[in-house]
Image 1 (cartoon, rainbow over the protein chains, first blue to last red):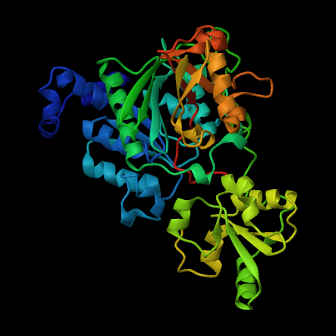
Image 2: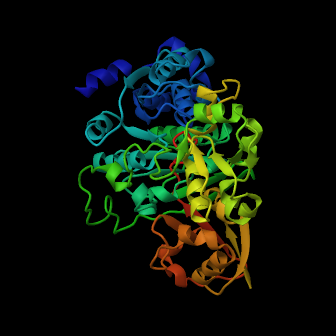
Image 3: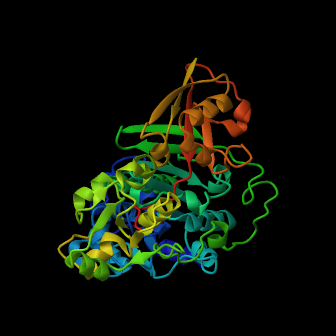
Length: 389
Length: 98
């Protein structure tokens, strides 16, 4: 059955020959390689920071079929790095926006849109339809799901991951090489994942890593060069240093080892200890004050001391005149606060300030409240001139 | 004898923003123990309650995973570099916890 399709596609039109001429004139790709690209089917998980450059370059290179899995909508904060989407795409589905960009770059590419959460229920069936899986996700449950589904379906997992200005890349789950679980058998507990105060990403970084993923994907399709199998590439964009660590296939790996214990997909949220949708301000027993109430009481001239526990760089973005002590510095700077005064603590969204309130109460402060929803809620409900970030 | 330890970005909040540390030690385990005694906040991120290295923190001596050498007992020399490689989910903090 595949023969007919292959015969039909196993030729380039004159337009395609012109389009891919800079590939065709180098022997490492040539006509044979370009036809391999045209027949290749690559599934990109995520149409965000890593997925954008990855899919754009794969389309430009002439990968015949690109599958995209995403359920998200383009947001203003995405535009700093997710270059498959433009300003006029805000509010659109990332899938639609990305498909338009790909069509513009190369109309010869068949884009298949999967408007869904990748899950244990759909991953295997989806992966079987493709040759290579490129993992551009941003959370541990999906990372482990992608890895396990790649091992179970025998598809290579082209991996990229980013944090602030550092990234990692590798090629996992090939026959001879290690998988993600060989490297990290278990995810970190949710309590130890970075907080807002440590978040953010240099916009160019997913560009760098996504292009590395695209490079590896193309090499796998062509069968050229030395793929990143059994190697973990560490990228430090700030120092502009690239390092490489050796990875080994773990014979005891629960998925790809000699005696695997994971032989079908599991509940990855449970595996990663995700405790459902935990609203940031629902730390129990923390006394709260609503933004409107704070506004009314301040306007009435009441003596309320505002404590801002965000980081100095966040304070520079916007503030409501609070005294700044970052959460991490609070224990050693608590003497700056007067426990006889009423204190309202805030952060960006209410999570860090809830911790601060809890800490202050244990330190003997009795008149201390958390500003519900943080400065973001203040912007929404009291003063829209305060920018949101 | 000082061994160089490279601290990855996610752990720098616990090392006073330091990206590298020079610590004494004859083995990788000793060097890491000395590192966390200099930076006590780092301890729970590297070691579990049982005092063992956490399973999601990988430690490399030069470019080799110590799990395939002699683990924490792996001898280290002054010219060696220890790299801590924690697992990173990726993303941009849109869905951070705090």
